[in-house]
Length: 220
Image (cartoon, rainbow, N blue to C red):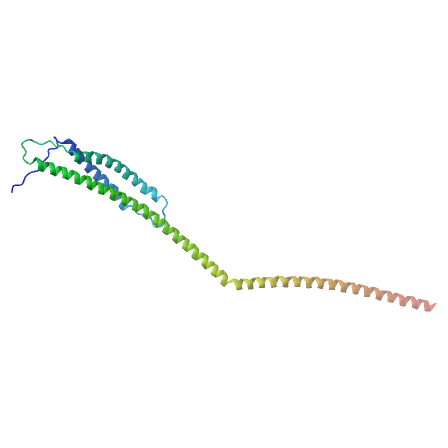
């Protein structure tokens, strides 16, 4: 069994080889976009502007998607009605026809699957960002609830001590009021005693005067 060469000359088949060239270019762009998506790290805490960064990668994917659709239309049309230019003397024309046509159809299907995979990887990153944000919100809410619970328990536990403190402060204030009133009463009592001493002295002076007058009246 002899081995037959399957060769198609690029110069005589520019349409076919142009489709293959565009396919290779799309593959290079796809690899770059997919690597950027897979290598994109989602922060655990600070998620501000994270979606904006992934959207920048999405714009490249959108451009790749548009180029792929144009290529897919061109390649599919060619695969449905392939036309190759080969030498008339070739004995394996049918083999060449089948080989390159099947190769093109495989490239179309493979590129379709790759674009689907790229879209899925991109959407997964968005889902992971949302999940991380929801997780952070849940943790924050839990911590706030825990702190509120601790503060409430602490307040209930220390409420009797607080009441005692307020009672002590009130007793001290009442004691000061009583002391001030006692001071007022003492000052009033001192004032009254001074008045009584003054009245006594006046009475003593009057009694002395009266005794003097009575003695003088007896001498006469």
